[in-house]
Length: 212
Image 1 (tube, rainbow, N blue to C red):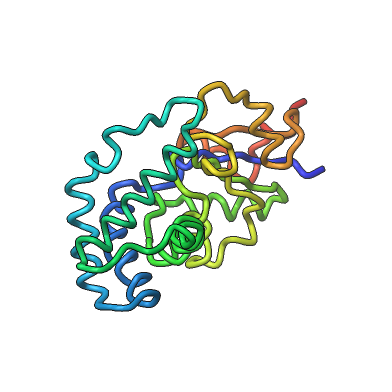
Image 2: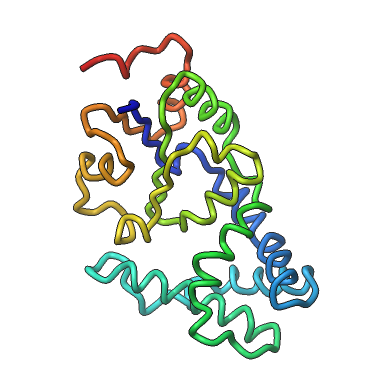
């Protein structure tokens, strides 16, 4: 079995850049889907961002049903977008489309990787390591879309977001279980949570993974 580097999204993403990119990205995806002006959808998304907390105020993302609560909050955001755009909300049958499919399309227009992050992932893959990404608060589809845009998805074997983890956050999840979710042997997995550790691990002659 190939050795695996499991990289936390916090070591990869520029969150400020992601927040800035999301309005136009959602605008483009929605214009191509239900139709309308990309700029109008982007403007509506910025209104959502400005009032973000109100969509989540009564939701508990730390309880046993955190995944259901997280998906409810995201669905509220989608319905809010349509309401502010003067449109009828999509039917509930389209929840998978907007929560599981659209984020990948949105991610393709979000250049929000941290400086040097993609290069480091490429170096790891080039050294023969399998790479998995851990995003406990971010939809995995969004990250897959961001990888699509850079043509880097081939170097990443899995992305573990809340849907894959079965919860929001990492409370109560042991590192060994995370490794297994990534399809890896826990003994052959290195967990990276900081950018500095990512860059160190990616150095061609770094031998941490060769230790038992």
